[in-house]
Every structure is written in C-alpha cells, then in structure tokens.
Amino acid sequence: MFAKACPSRPTLEHVTGRWGSLTMSALLDGPLRFNELRRRVDGVSEKMLSQTLHALERDGLVHRDAQPTNPPRVDYSLTPLGRETAERVLALILLLEERMPEVLEAQRAYDAR
Image (cartoon, rainbow, N blue to C red; front, side):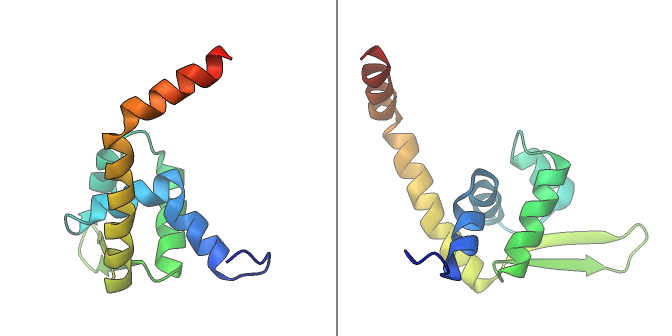
C-alpha cells in the first residue's frame, strides 16, 4: 500500500474520504434511495454523492439496484465486502467522536503555540 502504484490506494481514498466513509456508514442500517441517503449524509451535494456512489459501486462496495418502475426506483446497499469495510470505518468514526474532547484540546494547544 505504500508503493506509489499500489492499486489499493484509489479504493482507500474512496472509503476513507469524508463522503465515502459517511455514505458507507449510513448504508449500514440498510438500503436507501438516493435522496434518503442525501438527507442522511447532511452537507453532501447531489453531485458529490453521485460521484461517491459511482466510485464505491465500481470498487464493489456498494450495490445499485435500479427497478423498472414508473417513476424509476434506485436503491443503494452495501455488498458483503462493503458491509465489512463499513463496520470497520464506523468503528474509527465512533472512536474519533468519543475522543473529540482530546482532539479539540490538542488543536487548541497547537494553535496557541
């Protein structure tokens, strides 16, 4: 993974980026439609969410299920690999949320120097 040409690097970026990690964590609760997901991941633009979902789908972490109804219905869910990955990412997110007071204190101390 430390090699410049390692094929895991783009996927790591997709998973650990702000929108990728939040999108995958939101999908842990079950399938969501695009607008449900957009509301759940507060602050993500339609364009960014679309790009994130495409990248995660290409990486085999998210499944896109387009149903031929009128109007069309598209649901997004995690694949087995996506679920395993999202569980680990969520553990990191929860750790950081729990330890935010320490992080904020470290930031204040750094900025004061």
